[in-house]
Image (tube, rainbow, N blue to C red):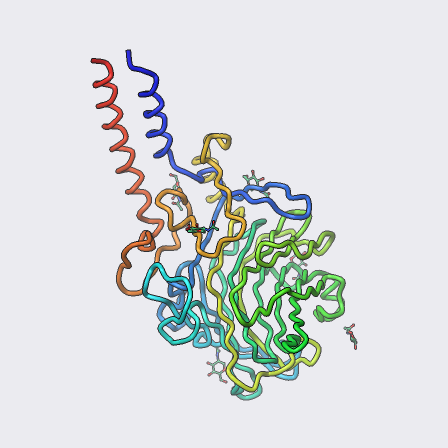
Length: 382
Ligand SMILES: *[C@@H]1O[C@H](CO)[C@@H](O)[C@H](O)[C@H]1NC(C)=O
Ligand SMILES: *[C@@H]1O[C@H](CO)[C@@H](O)[C@H](O)[C@H]1NC(C)=O
Ligand SMILES: *[C@@H]1O[C@H](CO)[C@@H](O)[C@H](O)[C@H]1NC(C)=O
Ligand SMILES: *[C@@H]1O[C@H](CO)[C@@H](O)[C@H](O)[C@H]1NC(C)=O
Ligand SMILES: *[C@@H]1O[C@H](CO)[C@@H](O)[C@H](O)[C@H]1NC(C)=O
Ligand SMILES: *[C@@H]1O[C@H](CO)[C@@H](O)[C@H](O)[C@H]1NC(C)=O
């Protein structure tokens, strides 16, 4: 008869290859600190991953740089805006283990969003990038951002369905006052009320302006919003700053965007800036429930027992360098947004492993564990 320690080892072996996070990713949120689970993830490490594809607006890693022109009338300011794909630039670090310092362009590494100092006709040349997925329905959305310090732009991290279903984090660089140490961030729910106010967020109760305890233009900080059915909670560096409830909370799925723009509106972005203004994004991490039936079916199939050890993974509260997608087996059956595509595979740090590798890795581990188990059982029974 095999001694019990052998069974303990077997359990550990089998447990360790059973897969992790198959029942989702959890976080506590809001002033009541309740725990919620989200089924899907989309993490992008802009310091190491180029999402600009062919530079002509092609989508990559679940992101698409935007190219479109809008008139001053549509932009609701004295100037129109030209959202140009070339204003979205990937400035990656080749070394897989480095997380700060300059990228290949000599500026901070990350995704650069530019507002140009030169106008095209009467349009300001600005930047925007969107997720290709439109199925982000409830979730915790986090971005590492260092804003421009050039006055006259709006840097935005937002979730959007339409003009009355929208969650915004917006930085107005003209509001920064370095001498007085005043650095406001604007948290906005665009709602029917905002529509009634002519989409002037400054006039709605959906706007909460909070002074940050740091200068957002001198370093990267994590900005986050958690979207649940009855409230949206806004954070900076893991600190809850504001909670919004009521009719402004969106009721549909949407997509996630980052933008950097100016239309000269004296009541909001001001500007346009007198220099090329750069806002840099180091990462976006989203843990969300998908509104796609296919994703929901996949979840139901892979999540056998949510109470099993490791079935639900806790999202680190605030850790810029942690990505589940860098782990070997922490993103089972998730949509594969791929690993770094800097032209060649990177070594070390696990960075080179796209999610696509995981399937084969798991299989190999399972075969190994199976044979090891057989050997131990045979050995133990003699
Ligand atoms: C997300 O979906 C899972 C699976 O359906 C569900 O258990 C969970 O409560 C959902 N989370 C939220 C915040 O609605
Ligand atoms: C925007 O307008 C400029 C001319 O001012 C033009 O060159 C550019 O192609 C337009 N962009 C798009 C996406 O239509
Ligand atoms: C936005 O979507 C919601 C829900 O589908 C809808 O009720 C609302 O009318 C839409 N608003 C606009 C401005 O299209
Ligand atoms: C918004 O408020 C400003 C003053 O703060 C006012 O001049 C403007 O008319 C208001 N706009 C709307 C659409 O209510
Ligand atoms: C953050 O994550 C990294 C990468 O997994 C890890 O090495 C580091 O210890 C974590 N930091 C904290 C404070 O947990
Ligand atoms: C998840 O698993 C299902 C069933 O095995 C499969 O049909 C689906 O393509 C997988 N999805 C992803 C994103 O890997």
